Length: 201
Image 1 (cartoon, helix red, strand yellow):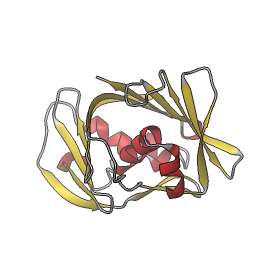
Image 2 (cartoon, rainbow, N blue to C red):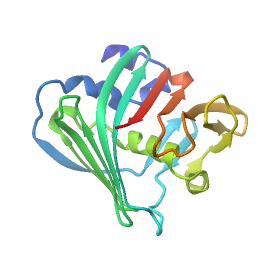
Image 3 (tube, rainbow, N blue to C red):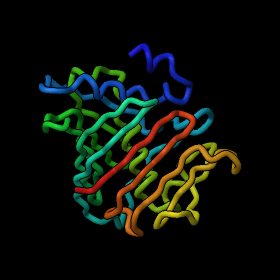
Image 4 (tube, rainbow, N blue to C red):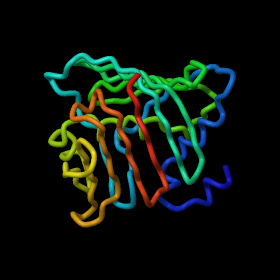
């Protein structure tokens, strides 16, 4: 844990990643927490979860999530479910043990998570990144503070970049096909030495 506490300011905004190392072969009792719907992505950059659109499609998606932070590598499985009323994200260890369940109703966010993760585990960061990657840009931009998400041409099928103050690119997202729900997605925050890869299963 000391290695991560000594990391850069941006890297310290992702403390939940370290907690993935705690879950290997067993699961523990869970507890329920009310979570904030706004997260800090960088210095002076915040994102508040976008409400669920009234015309939201019913979706069920299983994903393999690969996370790298400052050279350390972590893997988990996620199940994302969306309907017109709720957005649910379930995190599973590679062997299938439940790590957390996030339920978002468009206003409040509830987290049920393993006691081993502790109260500092903030799975809402992962949910925020998922919205930034999958939701229409016009839906997420009104809920960004200090930054703007734009679509731009690149060597991949499509790309998004999060700009702070219209100048500094702080996050890059690329897709291997046009439909994000079917695409392999790679998200990078270079200053935090953070990389996220989402592969649909």
